Structures are given as structure tokens and as C-alpha cells.
Length: 337
Image 1 (spheres, one colour):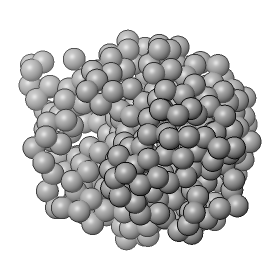
Image 2 (cartoon, rainbow, N blue to C red):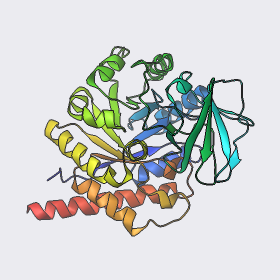
Image 3 (cartoon, rainbow, N blue to C red):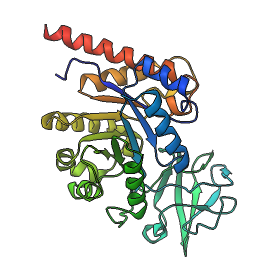
Image 4 (cartoon, helix red, strand yellow):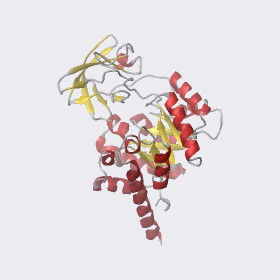
């Protein structure tokens, strides 16, 4: 049985919440940690927002997610719209702007792709099949209608990419984290304790904690050693679903929470907790049930992403999450008495 105190709430700060009034409102609604997604916005925006959070809520820790080895589309001037059956082109040529070809941020991407591979993007909302590879261009056929937007994740579960544990961009982001005195860095696609150690080598002050994101099969295969090496772990259910199997994500979540409890390592459960509340004032019963079970299984923190970064009801979503957590904690306490 998990601790009876309610889980903390991590709120992602974005365009709708990066202001003094909204930060105070989110804190009042239950936010206990502020998260910034380093894959979005500019360094200057993040610098200003970190300063704003520190001035407005000096006691609230800040988590900066660094992109790490996650493959994404780059910032695009043109975000292509397509229909099912259309062929679009991914490329590693960064000179393109999205109007003809869509660049991705991994310059060797095309070297690991072969015809027939399945590619998913935007947490699995978009799905494609690789038709052919020509030089640095990957031609993919869309399975569904959609729009491929800037800085969206690109997943190829069948590919085994060979990349350094720490990229040059990681080094830049870690320097930025130090310069701006954040409390935690979130590291994407951690697959070993060696990866955590490589990140720790860049840490110039001990209080900066490492949050390892478990979001693919490699992370699951080495879960225990990653948990032991990390200050916290995050279950990123978006990438985990497309990198493994959507049908198994709930079971993987339970495995990770159980393993982390054995080692007394805090766990953040993330992705689509209250996704409905990005556009609507009330959650679904399925979302409430999902959150309830995460707390019953021992989640230390629950994380909101689009709900508080770009959503229409950021304060309501945070307050709802707090109330669910409190209700479950009261139930656990009652069961113990």
C-alpha cells in the first residue's frame, strides 16, 4: 500500500500559464512542481519563465525536460496537412521548411530506416508506413488524415538507432539548467544506468536532480538499474505506448511503480491524465479512474502537460487532480485504520 499523503502535482508551464496571475492560481489549486518542456519555445522564453516562476513562487521546484535522444520534427515554417494515402517526405536536410520536406532533428535518421517500417508521430496520433529511402529523404505514406506540426515526436519502434548517450544539445541544455538554477532535469529515452551516469557527469552542483523518463522497451528492460541511478523516474505514457504497445502501457506502469517502491524512488506518472480538460471543463470518468489507480499503485507525482500549458481550463484541471489525489489518499488511510 502506498503512502497515504496525496501525490504532488507537476504542472507544465506554457503559453497560457507563463504569467504571474496564472502561476499563483495554479499554486493555489495544488501545483507542487513546475515543469518546462525544453523541446518547445526558445531559450530566452525559458529563461524569462524560470525567472518568473522563481519570483512568483520561490518555494516551488522547477523541472526542465531536456530533449535528449528523442527524435522530433524541427520548427517548421509550413506545417503540412495531408490525407490518408498521401506521401510526405521526412528529411535530415535542415534547409527545408516543411513545405516540400519535413526535417527531423537526428541527422543520421535515414540511415536506420528501411521500407516497410512503421512510423508514428505526435504520441501516436499520426501513423505512416515507409515507402522508400532516397539519400537523406524518407518517403512515408499516411494511414490517417492529419497535420505534422513543429517539434512533434517521431517514433520508429522497429529501428535501433545508434546514438551517443549524451548529445551536444544535451550539454547545452545542462549548461542552461545550471545557469538558470533549476531543481531537476528530465532526460528522455533513458535505457541504462550508464546513460544516467553520463548525464550526472555534466552536473556541476549536487542538488540538481535527474528524472529519468522510462518510455521505450530499452528503459523497461533495464528498469531496476535506471531507478537505482535516478533521483526520480517519469512514466511517459505517450512515447511508451507508441514504442511498445498501447494495450500494455497500464501494465508497464504498474511494473514500474512496484519496482520504484521497492527502491523508495519517487515516480511521476505523465501524459493525458486529464486530456479532455484541454478543451472541456470536466474530465471523463475513465480519466478519473486512471488517475485513481495510479495513486492507488503508488504514484508520487501526477503530471499535467497540455492541460496547463495550452489548455482552456488549467486551474480547473489542477484543482480536479488535487481533489482526486486527496480522495484516494483518504481512502488509503481509511483502509489502514
